[in-house]
Image 1 (cartoon, rainbow, N blue to C red):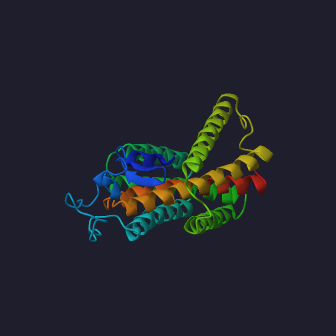
Image 2: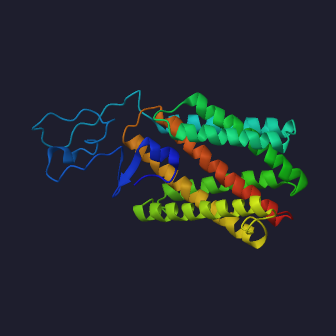
Image 3: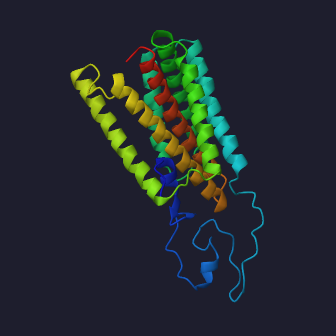
Length: 283
């Protein structure tokens, strides 16, 4: 199973019937020597035991080049921290919406380039975070000052609450990432994005609010749906990180994990910002 997050799906994070791996090849048949080794088809696996070895293979020694949770936390802190710093710069300097939209387009291009690269590029990922931060700071300032006072802080708190809740539910296995869960989230995400694209097209061609999916009562409904989808993306991202660590992914994959988590957090924040703006008196 591949993550709905395009970053992880390009990097080979996968699950098949509950067994995760990187670019996993065909599973060995039961009874084969490789069947006792879950890393048998993993390109990052430790060397297998010699032929004829009976019993479980010895535990692999720690490897300095493998991804760890500390690596993921540190890289995610860097990317999210840069987003926050650049958002503060845009807010303090009162960056106009025109340049902010330009920054958003640059961030989108950088994100797409990195998503389709075979290897993580830290400068590219950090550049994405910087431009995304400029956009978030400017749009947050606009909404906060002209539409809903305090909307930005409420969106930040809401994003933090969703992240914490999903992490706790994932760690306690209240949320279980299965193939059925993945398929449901993927189908819902595709439908959501298509509807928002159609709504944007009608808004551009006809003016106004398009089909009304982003304003009024419909806007509230789709805002809630967007936040729920973001929470589901977080669960998928947590699973991919967990699988990556368990299957000995190289350390540079921690940058891709941080990149994917940052994309999801930005999604959730923007949905919260839009929802608060609608609820507090603006379309």
